[in-house]
Image (cartoon, rainbow, N blue to C red; front, side, top):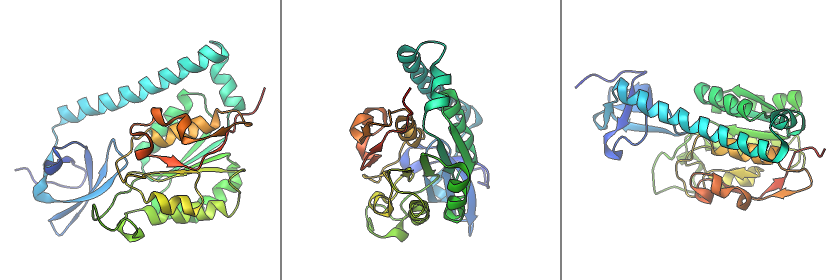
Length: 272
């Protein structure tokens, strides 16, 4: 068996290698810290439960992931063209949609998120900031960019599954998301700033209590990479006079309200 090292792409045998992970740290040559490549999850695993994924399979699965992202952008572009006209869709969105500030703990996801926003002609700033540093900088960034919508995300996950649902320290990064929401909310009300926060298996109730309008993950499941982007997009492109609830777009989320839910918010699209 090939020795596993940092940087390798692996799958967990016990989970039928359903998620591609990057090896980010090896502890005592036994426990491995992993971060999902196509899913916003952080986990640990015993080295004996890991198998290196072949370059061919990695390429195929990443191609599928990128195709899904492109398909979503194309679908949304078509909707804009249908309602606003073929030539003015993107320009209208860029000039009139709500301003998005997106903080992401993962560099590659940051790049893909910006590609998604730009593909839809949304007014978005994306910053790659580690989950444990987001609370330190969020006030400064909100003041600088004056967003209408704030996305706080990255990687998360429960340390012990099926227990400790109400223990914030049983989540890898939920406490950082909670703190970041609190810091952001101390500067602007929910009417001024709509907040989405969380990632895979995040402590949904704590994040909502901290002041988020939408959060993951009520059922403590893995969420789709695009889910936080869908929330931001729907708020940014909904008329400012209309209140948006999770019911308005839950069918566009991979697992509906099991993955993302919230208390709702006013849209941020400026009226013509």
